[in-house]
Image 1 (cartoon, rainbow, N blue to C red):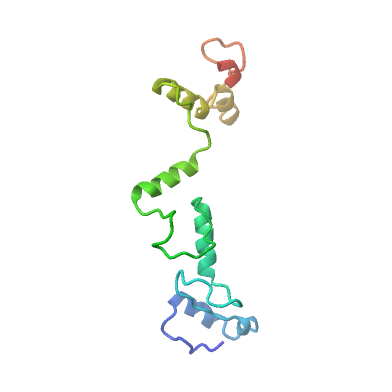
Image 2 (cartoon, rainbow, N blue to C red; image 1 turned 180 degrees about the vertical axis):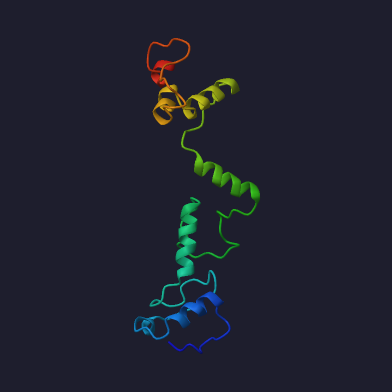
Length: 150
């Protein structure tokens, strides 16, 4: 590897790593290739790792896979504004289905609270010092798991 190639155009941290290992035998086998961002794969022999990272990021936001390499103005699944971005993150966190449409607002809130709030039995298992008993404070007879509460 020629340390003078592209001198002054690489980041200082990359340059420091290259200089530190310039005399190591394995460094001579390393090639640094620069690709413009989102340029696609220019050749069949060299993968553009920017495109690999782009595909991984799309998978994390539940977008359609970028198989046809459309340009930014042709894509149908673009998240272009704040509402689209927050909606994508909110829906990605959802682990329970929507409440039934016939439920009223108060019933839907109660259902969500029941789905998400821990029971006294779970809290006792997680924090036995703070929650010394797994019984409900109303009846104090049985273990207060979700089946008992219902």
